[in-house]
Image (cartoon, rainbow over all chains, first blue to last red; front, side, top):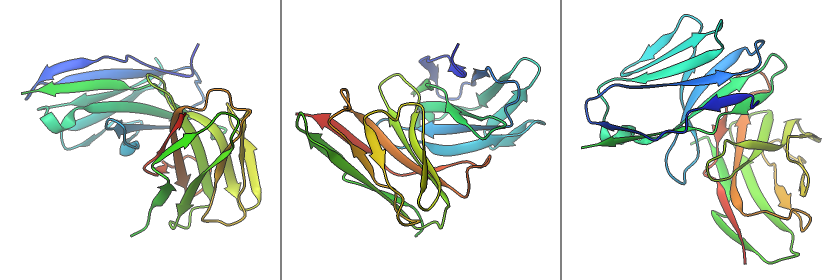
Length: 109
Length: 113
């Protein structure tokens, strides 16, 4: 089983729609969680950290479910510029960093 | 501006040739990392360094070598022993190898001629 798994998508949504997807992790002792955004043929860029209580940054909401070992990302009021691949990153208690393969989101006009 | 600079952006290698990818950061970060990304896959860790003159193998170190003679520099050599080197290579840094997020360079695309 992979340490971090994501639905590759693609999620094709119209502008203004809400899209949400999850990332599951296998190590129950994982301590830190992040969502990165990667545009085609570019480097990943940090989108947001994921806190235990859940957190929001504008149209983006991230949540952590430790019991079921997954994190989620929700994008409200999707924009064309939200089209990208979203990478889930999990850091274990021994500081090992694992990346998911990414979920591709395509927002259409 | 502070950041991570990778060069070259595109690199071509002949069979049996070693090539070196450059990574420089001026963020004063202690930790630096090299990842490889293949289509449809997540980033896989090749090597990482927590401090100058020290580095550790990642998950896929075979066929690669690194050095960390200066805090700001962490070059990666793709040796002829790496049989499938065509990939997108990303260098990253963080304040330490703790639980912080990482900053990435723009990446180098390596292809075999």
